[in-house]
Image (tube, rainbow, N blue to C red):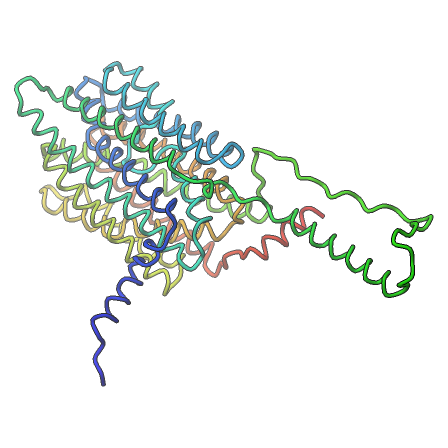
Length: 483
């Protein structure tokens, strides 16, 4: 039996990792992935120090939790408005506006230390308390990527999109940690001043993202609806058939015969009015409702154990410096990033839903175990084990949601899902801040782990056997509703 050549192995590996898919993707797809890396780099840097910065200003744990919750509430309003009208006003315009808000928030945090001014900047701007996505970017970018990719390679594109985001978070955290330690080693730099310098970098990265958003092409905008085109084709076929039958019956008839007395002219083709409001089919609304309920439980648990709270927990319990914290979360973020490629390969074999559940459930268990050890090494071990499968559900979840609704609905649906998730997540920091103030920080991890495990089991029960909707089925739904 002939052995497998190295070239064949390399080809298989590149296909499994989705390298062919990302290399052959469009320029806009690559720009979107690069934007996500830059954005998550900024989020990772700010998340590592957010709770520590607020604490250095003399703000209590309860008020820190309130700050994070109000940040998420502001994101709900901003994201809901921007994503709801994104397709009508222009996706590139919304991405550009979001970049401006991100830059403005970074500048306010750089030059102000007033609690309520920072609250206002976080509500009306873009500041991530969790290290994860915040603002209108993710929903719009995922909708564009879904439009620019075919179903066969979509999971690969989402995998690299998610991987680069996690890699950006990891690089941002480790860079921030060691940069702060170096700045604090200088005589004239206090912790608060070093933290503000990081937010200055955050504002600069917002400008970089603004430039990348302006480089996107018209292909990122929504495709024109196909329903009007189908009506024109049907009408043309009727006219052609009528003309052919007339010519066969009487070749000598005048070129412009008079219409019969009782005939009626064909109605004009109705022109669809342009609207900035999205339209969602009834079947998609049902799916959206179910997913929103399930995602709300998972997001509330994520809000209880945000990255900012976890870094604060390790700092207060084990007295870790920022550099060590950066190394730990760099490791966990890189592990989480690489796991996305494995998730894309697994989903091709066992399906999207099973990949979501069977990879996310172990991370929920490890999350609940993090606060139990009294020594640093076991706690870090549980944190790393959690990272191994923490984000493996993201790629199949993105592909699952994109396949569950019609292409014209993706931006609105993904935006609404993100709003529900952020709104649910906003209550988590309040609970954690209250528990931390009572010296019961460890209970927050147990609650978060239990909620996430319940979400996984409920997701499996409600959507096991669900078949993604095809575009043909979606067209039938549209025609049925129009009738």
